[in-house]
Length: 300
Image (cartoon, rainbow, N blue to C red; front, side, top):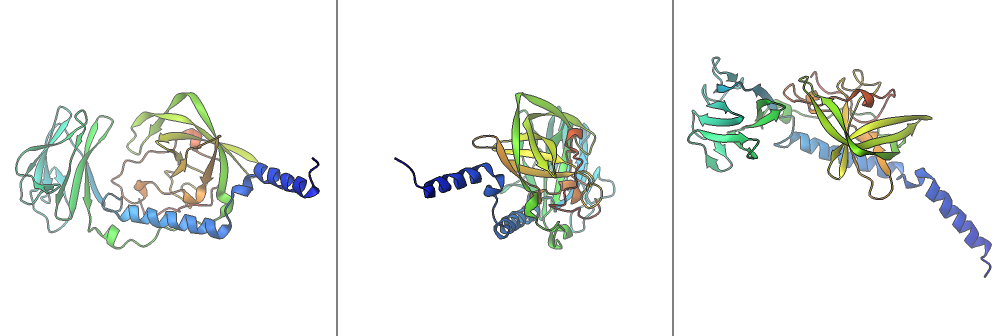
């Protein structure tokens, strides 16, 4: 049976749209709304109890005991008013951290801490969060170092926070990229702001084109997403010198992913000097000015 010219034209239009990456682009208004919703979620996460704005201290423990309080003689001094001179004592013993309270009303969850208590054991997968009024603290481990991460839920950085300056949303920075897997998975060294370097598994890289040039970004695994640590020609100027981060969804079928630089965001180190941010590996320092996403913030 001969097909009419209408069906032939329809078939050609369908093929053209299937071959055109721009056919998957949302319109500018929908895209701007999507990015704005993402940004509002981003602000909520920053201001949340586990966000980065309330981080007020990070102290690396030595083996043995470290006193904690507002006293000038404390090994880990809390420079905030309204809290006791002596809050407690941290004890680092054979890779485990204990806490002994020296004041009342220190809690783990709803249980008050009355005596020396183990609060961190990486081998035993124990990591407790303690609280005293608006203070929150827990132990983090970076390589062989153990640190106390301290938060104040009522710090001015949270209560006075307004906005993060951003480049205007531009749909031209929403790109399609090709995911190229490493077989086998490749280990790439990632250095943090403390100078510690550790190998991280990379399942592959993203390859994309911009203004006629091809660029590659090594990705780290993040369950159903890919975690990107990048720098570009705006780093150290309009954007943070230590680079920016992005998450993108892994491809469900085929090898194409959406790479939207309008969602490039600042590392925690932009908001606080008490974070341990990973830095972009050399191969992820792009010779490209990415005029999209978050600009630098504050003075950190």
